[in-house]
Image (cartoon, rainbow, N blue to C red; front, side, top):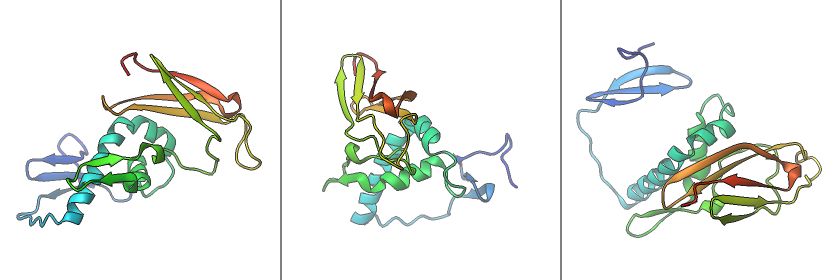
Amino acid sequence: MIQGILGPFSGKVGPVVGCICRRKGFYVRSLPAQYHDAKTPAQLRNRARMRAVMEFLSVAKGFVNHTLGGQTERMTATNVATRLNFHKVEVGEDYVARIRYGEVRLSEGGLSELAGCVGVATRGCVTLCWEGMACVGCGSTEDGVDVFVYDETRHLGRCAMGVAKRGDGGCVVRVPEEW
């Protein structure tokens, strides 16, 4: 297994690229000598989509690692979140991407979603209410609820892990007043 001078690394350092792969471990490769970039409209749309998803997930990383970590041996939590959300981005004619936040998935599993979940934002907090009863076979009233609140204009997020139980029917998440 090849590692950098100070241990394994991920990213580019000059002409050297360090990669971390779950299956293969750590490896180092060089940048290609020449790079031909056609930049077709389809490539530009995909790049805009990927950039939007990765910028959003950079803020939600802690939450994603908590909710999706350990779900698969082949992919990291960020890879799973990227797969779940890549097609939830609209790209306009000018290649400006916009995420459809109402469709974003930051967790995955066998439990049902919170039924009838409604959120109300007031100064300094977000109040969430849902139907507290779990459907048969879809979970328990004792299941924990994790919440991620995102401020798109400031590109900031707030994680609230285990903030409530499914049976509570609601919770309050504190956020900065300027949100």
